[in-house]
Amino acid sequence: MKRLFLLMLTILFLSCTNIEAIEFDEYGAIDTHGYISQGYLRSDKNNYFCETEEGDYNFYEIGVSMTSEVSDKLRIGIQFLSYALGDFGNTNFHVNWANADYYINDWIGFKAGKIKIYHGLFNRNRDADFLRTSILLPQSIYNEAWRSTISSLNGFEAYGTINAGLAGRFKYNVQTGKVDIEPDGGVAIAAKEKLLEKTNTTFNIEYIIDTVNEEPSFVYSLMWETPLQGLKFNTTYWSLDFDMVGTALLQSLDVALENSIFRTSASSITGSVEYTLGNFIFISEYSYSKYDFEFITSLVRTPSDLETEGYYVNGMYRFTNWFETGLYYSVYYPDKNNKSGKKDLDNNGVRDFNPIHSAWQKDTCLSFRFDLSNNWIFKLEGHVLEGTAVMMKAHNTVDYNPADIDLNKNWLLFGAKFTYSF
Image 1 (spheres, rainbow, N blue to C red):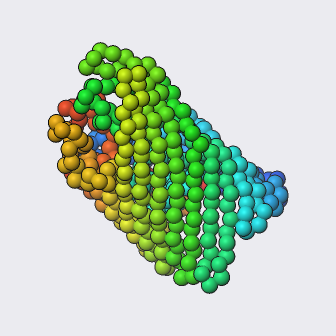
Image 2: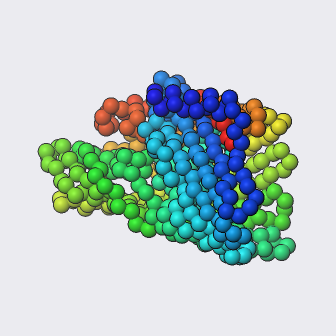
Image 3: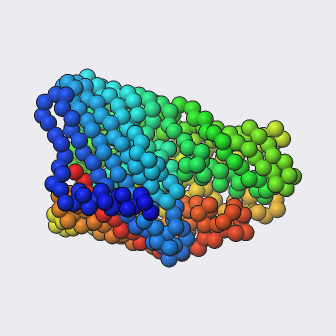
């Protein structure tokens, strides 16, 4: 509540002052921009990453970026960010990205530092709400639980643009480095829930995460800007390997196994198409991810794997300079080989998905964006959902126990959001 009060005071201060972006033309000067977003989410059933059944204001972003052109070849910059969606996010200001960008020519340039990761078309700019129509990005591609993990990496990037004459031009980006995974973050919680789903039928396990050890990741992006004006194709790929180290409590045996490891090797490829015609924009993306898991303790070594699939289609139209609307349909399957959720997990007939409608999530979303001024934006959004594949069981039960999970198949979600940018 104190955080919300301070945020509203900041917004009130900005609204009463004439703050604009600070820009200078000479080398070495600082260019400063920022934004503050405050949202509200309410659902009729199910808690969506926070207490949405009761209505939740713990949904915001505050970002400030500073960049400087040191020379005609070298540019440096940094962004500080604080954001939250329920329990997810980093409510303290942290470095979202900070790097040095050295441009050699159109063909090649390099970045070093903390760099935003390429994933689909929107991942690098997802923190800036004012850059898109919708409040929530399609969760089939941009799962909020993974937001902090695939936001940025500490490492290096090579990039460039290749003009191909009549074939248009190609833009490429290659990145390598390490991501940060918090033991209490969305990815760790999602991996933990997957571990419990796979093992609780036998061992009744509770897993306490102590640390997460990450291996270097690899990322690439290739965009083709076709000769047809407004038509673009894009593909991105990333890989991520990490070990969660903690204590496995085998409650059925009353045994505690320290230094147990849940190893995850993940990779994801996303294909995108975007077409702009006047005030209309059409976007569609498809993503396939592969996960290899291994649970290692002094008593057992259990491997498993998983393939996920997600896609969406999205249409947006700007009617006036102050009003824009968007409509998307998003589908996600946490197991592309078990889309109905009816396959059996073992010979005892215990299913992979409990409840069964957690085997998919289908989301129809209608968004309205109102540009109230050059700095202020207001959005309204409604979702009609079937399935609960993206939902965190931890947010919909008191303690992890399949019998206690309270998730409804069909549900509605409403969102509203104010954003001030400068």
